[in-house]
Length: 238
Image 1 (cartoon, helix red, strand yellow):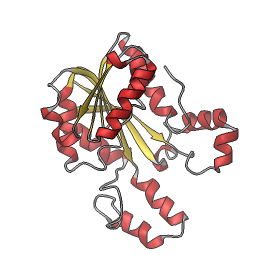
Image 2 (spheres, rainbow, N blue to C red):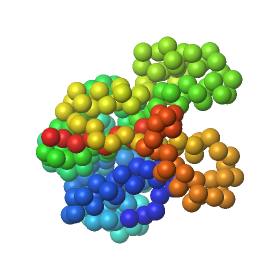
Image 3 (cartoon, helix red, strand yellow):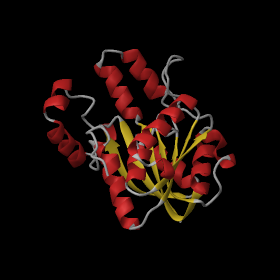
Image 4 (cartoon, one colour):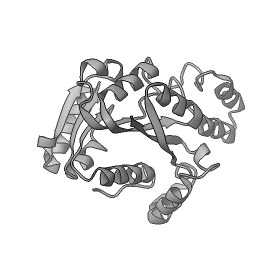
């Protein structure tokens, strides 16, 4: 499978372990998978991936990318969104479902997580990435935007003002509760981009391997995990 950049290294590390645990080609579903940043490498590793995304342009780019990678026969592109997933994918038809940067923008996150869980076969895994409220608060405060930081703290959903492109943000506890309510048992939580968004760009360019190693070393450890830009949860359906 392709190597990953420091910003997504921990997600790939967890996914590789899950794929190795299965020990066979899996049927995967990537909801909001866009142009195939995860789907194409998974297909190249021998897995069959359905990508559901609302953007026809993104799906066209996915199709081109899959063709160029020689995996067009292992990728299915479906136009739609997480809120309508129940009408797009049969229940208990996949082994692995990805919902990355999805629950922050959908109309009803509980409905979407329930739909993700419904697509999984018993024992199947869900890989979920969500925006971390604590990281957003710190970023605003460090940037001198104290009123905006205070708004993020006080907001019930971790949303800023009307210009905020995200509808909600999560903590490890709130994301775990959401998945648990929908029948998914959270097994692992890691921080994504613990320091990658904080270090100067020159560090990422000159020392990518060191930065990646540092990210991986901190990703599963509190309190570092809890201030990462995003949180990655791996959960399993009973």
